[in-house]
Amino acid sequence: MHSIDTLIIGAGALGLACAARLARPGQSLLLVEAEPLIGSHGSSRNSEVIHAGLYYPPGSLKADLCREGRERLYAWCAAQGVAHRRIGKLLVAVDEAEIAQLEKLQANAAACGVGDLRPLDRAALQRLEPAVRAVAGLLSPSSGIIDSHAYLHSLLVAAEARGAQLVLRTRIERLQPDAAGWLAEGVSAGEPFQLRAQRVVNAGGLFAQQLAAQTAGLQGIPALHLCQGRYFSYSGRSPFQHLVYPMPEANTAGLGVHATLDLAGQLRFGPDVHYLDALDYRVDAQLRAPFATAIRRYFPSLDPSRLQPGYSGVRPKLSGAGEPPADFVIQTPAAHGLPGLVNLFGIESPGLTASLAIAEKVAAAL
Image (cartoon, rainbow, N blue to C red; front, side, top):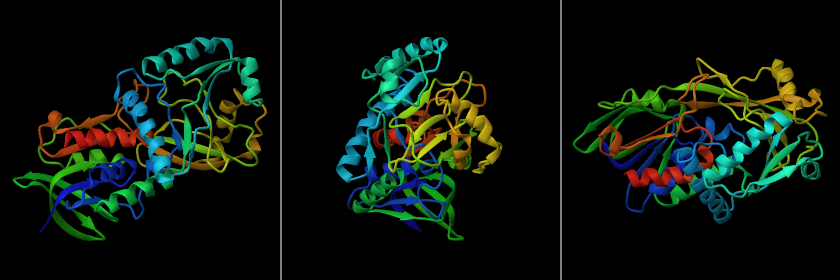
């Protein structure tokens, strides 16, 4: 039976960031991924936004790790040559009734340590984005966009350069503590296998709870709620130079259907919020009408015929429909009492932005 120092389960942004942080020459680190490609789920099905950290409760893991992770991510991209751009985000109040919400958001951002938001009146908004209809706004200059696929690849390159090994089409199905650390059982390319690892990181994303339920002796597993976010692409030239976000929708799990750009200038709108009973990445073309209604609140000249179904992602939420948003859960040996094991639960947005900071917390815990 193979014995290794570190086993990381899941090769999305979190698993890859942990591998890049934990890999060391002379130590064995195995990164396993059930899919045939890295980042096949949430890490490649998102808005590719580098978040500033505006929305989250002050002192929460989401707030603190987003702010720290943002700076780590910008530095990583600069050092590793990962394409990115600080294009800035506009948060807009479309009518007078939303101004109080905008001010509350600014105060929350300041309490989270984000003090660079710039208030904009109607005229200033028009100068920045003539196609946007709003009475007031905030400019977040720390927000940006990233090539998420290039980022994932850069993490893998860094991890492998330090001795990590990636194995695809490999699923860990059970974990059992033993005298040497952890006994892992699973299937690789259709063949069952076992290995021992001194320490294990469960970065399984949508499947983290499934493995946790098959981890002997583990208690305190939070419930998983699958929440789909769908995107529509906008054909033709984008009228926007910045990300454009409406005020977050009341009593929902999302930030509103916003406008995002990729590094090629392609405009897309989303995501919406749609809870699921089972994993589903389909985008129904009949959603064009409700998307157009939401977008026209701040982009009245929208041509709905240019909206085309794009893609979707599924968030591994820890809160259900109508419930208050839940924080990240980084479950360490100090919490569950099992040495050498860290579980990552509910790492949704801003998980990509926070990934390098989360890897630091995992390293400290191990």
